[in-house]
Length: 408
Image (tube, rainbow, N blue to C red; front, side, top):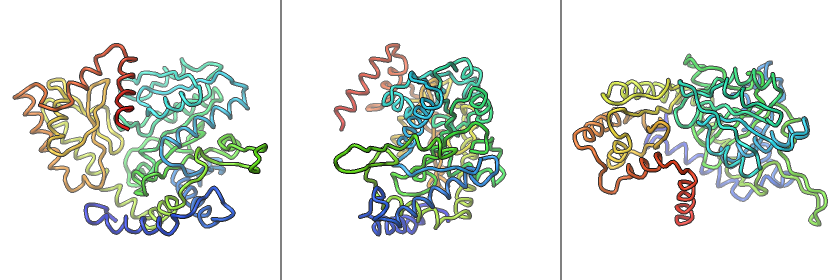
């Protein structure tokens, strides 16, 4: 099952049909929509099995829920860890430790739930610095975060070493698999050298993973998993004194779209192990070809050693943001990164038939910037460059807020 171009139409027609069949359902009312509750349980169970739930070392109690996306899964994992550690250790001024490469959703969670963030610079390999994490642990630490892989550079943090720290200091460890959850288990089966990342690692207490990325489910489907029910119970909100009756909800949303759950179930069961294995094989192969192709372009370098399907690259000889502007004019949409200034491509099935065109356009763009340095008309290179150099990050933050306020 290779979903490229027109070949994807059948897959998405299937999940759209599944959605339409259940578009009126709401899993908040489990007693009314029992079939949706069953579909959610099966999606969670299938995902948990990919991430070690059937292995003895996992403890055999992995549980979880579907959410609206990776950010909600992360929010819930952070909120649950906070409340669990408050019950377990009496921590009332919670802190969490993240690498500077961790997703911005953790900053959002910290703002929402009044948690202090201790942000640790990455090491020279652009991975979470375990020694730096250890130095930040104190009596208020509730959790650490490891990414597999991190969004910026596609690198897997040393989850085993972080797990050892979490176990030693009796704190939570969340693994962010939002990007890698539906690639890494299959890449490992295909023989790629994937370091440990799931519930088989001692110390991991929660995992977030998106079905709507490489799981090819409809947008708005993610999963948060926990080591056991004792931890997950702190995710729920139960209200006993409402005049509307007794109320309990598992996730941030009350009402949820049952159609998305059905769409995710249809995607996973139709693709199956063989479909995901085949897709992963193609994506991983092309990712490595793109990595090698970028390394062969004079003036560019790849950041770190990509473990998966995200390849980040920068340059010491040209303005990489000017390169990005030219690539954008050719129809390519790459993510602009900072510290260091760089770009990344997240390789999907759609790229597997056009990667040679991508590499050609990238080389031509670099050559163009070398021959004619300076921003192109209407380009964003000056904006990205200026924002990266501004020492007053508060001012940058205010600019972002003003931009968002004007655009939505």
